[in-house]
Image (cartoon, rainbow, N blue to C red):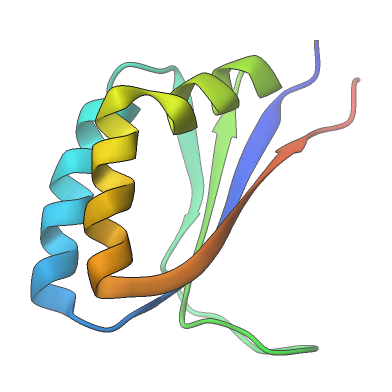
Length: 97
């Protein structure tokens, strides 16, 4: 079964308020076997419009990535994040093998 990834690109408008999102999202993340591969580190805009915060999270499967995103804990985090940041999240299935 191929792994899957969340690819998130975010511009934080209110860093203090965003801390509430991080705390709430952690409740969802702690329920899944996931691994952060990139989390807001240095970046370079190579092509197209970019965002200032970029996150890649690895999950065991697309089903797990979806379950985490739709979990009640993460949906509470989404409501908080949308108050303090603009961005997008894509769930992507990786290559098998």
